[in-house]
Image 1: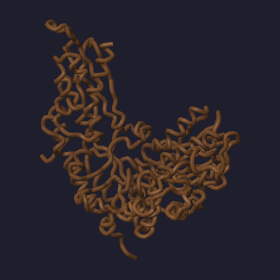
Image 2: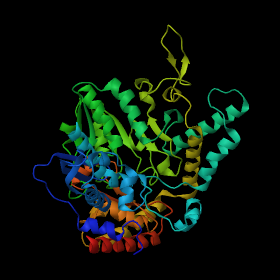
Image 3: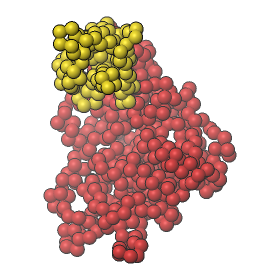
Image 4: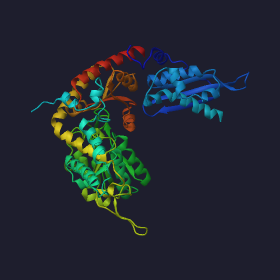
Length: 130
Length: 415
């Protein structure tokens, strides 16, 4: 396979998305649309209080959406990664964290596809924290 | 007659020397630049750099002369007077210019503006915003979703004494040719009969066929330099001479004014100076003039059309043999005189195809191509667009089709 962009792991997440489902009674929910290509990712989640630290933690995370391989695989990988993390940890994540997760380099246009899920997640959490 | 030699033409473009494997199929977004255009721009900075229209010294006079010569070249190229040629930043600025200056002064509540359903955002948003601000109505010539051609409307009801402007794209940047024979002329004629003005967006056709403002009966005409082998940052707005007194300056400031005082209103210079405030993109305007020289010396539009339509036909033949491929455009028109083809493949996102092709040095556009309303109308959020210019070869089409099939196989297996 000569394709440096579409690595096996990425394609696997696209083909068999993790956490692509609806949650019953989520604590937070958000939708985001990438106007450049019509990709869409929406995120839902449930939080709990960590018994040891008392901090808010992400208990359950799910996404829904449609679009290109990058946007959908990134959402699958991000939701997998963020489950069990503290809310403030997730809120501190940035572009580089997502790129590390999906393990590819992207140009500025394609980057928007990859970051769609993080934008959705962070905007949903922001609303919830407020 | 010499047959069209795209290989020879290609050798005049430095980018293909630096990137030997590049297959550039996105000339509808921007054309590559011939070496002589690039040299003209750098030559200006090296040998003539100075401001124009205000410097008395020799260097400044020479720069002014070069800039004005370029305006004359543009004028001759579209059969206009040089007074009627205004340099702008590009098609988008040219159209915003008309909306903001002429439009604000001449369109009022209850008036209407007519465009097509196939407009690029550049010829859609300025009118949508103007209509909303003024309480005017924005009307559309409908697109037939089966033939991908504009429908023949009931012109008497659509164009009436309340119609102030008809703003039409000549070629769609997504669909290519959209006007059935004679329809554009009919719409323009009807517009003039009720006193409406006519703006034509020729951004997509200016580098592919002869443009003549008089044959079009255009009041305004807009295009970009960078799609016709010129530099970015330079475009053209043609304003018909009769209208010069009815078009207020778009911007005010340096070099467009005769007299300014604390108390009295300013007295503006005559067109075209009153329409060009501030220091213009001088080197880019000169580069555009050289791009026109290039076209005149190297490209015969009849030959070019045959060449590009030939490539288009070859591409269409290949695409039609691919399962799940949907072509957006009128096949007969495209095969006869097209230079671009948009399409999509079932279940594979255009961005993924484009990224796969990019890994194989093929540059094609993917997305909604800055025509979201059209994409919504067609129900296609994202498509792939292949567009041709003089430097493209049959081999480009063959490699593209091979790699496209490879990409479809790859995603088909993995989805």
